[in-house]
Length: 315
Image: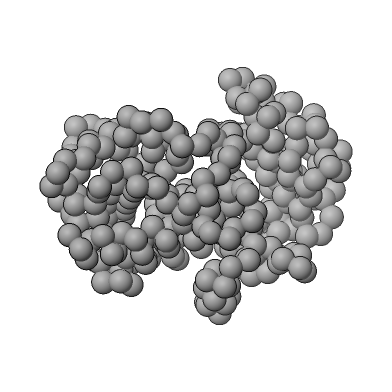
């Protein structure tokens, strides 16, 4: 298979890079995604009759580029304001993955396709796939987390990432989380970063909680079994579970690369004459947040798409 541009990873950065390329007239684009859905960490899971976001829960807006886009998303009904005044927290009306799917509509995506390595040649690149297939492309954009991107290229990762363990807990009754169904910060037990009640959030018909553990705690417990990790998480957050006992649908989500331990002060990196890397760890000029987030992924993808459109046009 041959194409002009291959984008490895169909998370937010990859989707925005592809949309930007198409807006600039580059249409021979293929997104390659190892998972069964687009979205990356814009992830939503059905659990019984309920539903839970288990990646990004919301996003904030500080850049005029994203603010303009969010206005159109609000009109489309894809997102809504969840809570917060100074910097409103926006969330997907049907879950964060539904937003990703709406943004990816019309793009050519090849799901369940794992890239094992990428080799650059003077006249193009070859992507070697699990199972023996090969994709040839003139240019490659890698949006996977930096450690995974570096592994594909056989180079050292520009930044390290921390893991995150997330307990998805089903309750038979209401939780003790107050409206709007979100708690974080120092009020939570050690090791717990955030708790979200998705019924109170408005995307689930039943009570399902997402309990996010800190990077430090997740690193310490990552090698333990799902059963042991879930039991520990339940003990830590039991005061928030309410009168109804937890149900039988409890699950554990493991993000090995959840958040960058440090960031790159560039919106993307050139990893070769025909290969570039981008993602939420790559910050655009003037970004004072110093951390990975939805907006940094969005802006990095757009910047990489604009750069790649110029490069394709010159080739």
